[in-house]
Image (cartoon, rainbow, N blue to C red; front, side, top):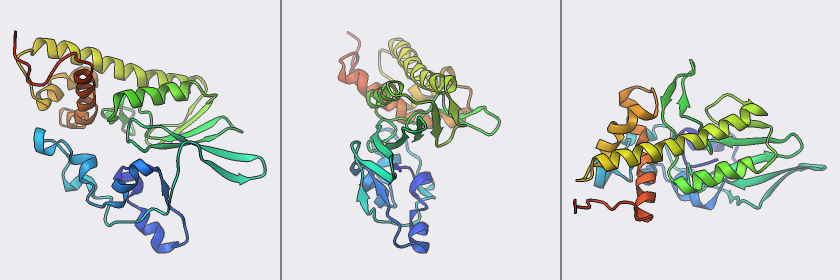
Length: 243
């Protein structure tokens, strides 16, 4: 489980019908999941950038629900016999994102930890862009998966992948990040006098995917992460004047 209302919003209903069911998440996502208002997850850019998803983005979080236990990357879920499922901490999309690995079948259950080129519609066309937040964490998660013997990949919004399809899914996830870096750097060089995050989103959105124009708003999370990383590396500074 991770902090996204479409993934945890049904927890109160589960507890209503099965009070003894234990709800678990990573400590880094616990506070967000237990807070039905969820403001920091979707609206942390509202004040400075007039961006966010509003309360409509939390429609699947109708009320608070307490988490029973926390899981970390070194934990093991014991199913019985010699069948154990390691818990993996795979941040990037959220700070506390978890995945489960079935070593007997070389299968990873990754939810939204890696997102290829974006979220697809039923037809396969992209609905909107990947929604990772922490770029370095997301890239580390991709490398982590690539360094483990994963044959079968079961995600949250994408068709299951097998063997070469799994490798391709992970490779495309990295390629999207690299393309964002490249397109963003060129855009920033062309707007050296200053640009808003909104202008960046709608300026480079069409170069990153073929989703509809109004769906570019979902790029706010990844692009903010990319710009923050470039700033930390000293490549550019906010509101830096032309020399």
